[in-house]
Length: 237
Image (cartoon, rainbow, N blue to C red):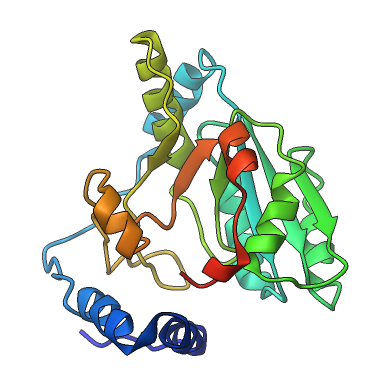
């Protein structure tokens, strides 16, 4: 199966190479290219009745999520898809915070057209990089957990429900989860074909110190994230 190489991915690879050196870049590329493909993989999204059941059950949960999105000259198509996927979650106790470093008004126009109280738009004075821009979005977060999302990502409709259900279950056992992450996948522009599932291992500190295998989707206790913040030296990692 062929794979389209996006210019943004090429630029990210070059930045990674400059920052981490040839050896680390080689092993990172080897891991991605050598990832085992699942020929029989087929993503089956949850049906309408399932999502309704999740919405009903979720009313008994109290956890609130803050979804942080740093935006920069995002295409209208990708932005609309991202917002729709967040606001269309079966678990709706959330806020979507978009920190926009664009020089045009396209992102602002698209976001404000949604007229949803759960969406917060913040225009940044300048683009200081994805880490710094995310930190500025984080300043406005009020949720129990903060989640990271790229401006051209989408969430499966049951993503936040699965996170909330896990948090609720563990709280019942007296366990306060600090961080949760999920597998991820790639899809075509129409969100009809899913073709490159990334099944992530259980938490592995050694692996994480050498490779950001967690990436998206991830949520962390909001207060912990605000204490740690993101470092610009890790942009593109």
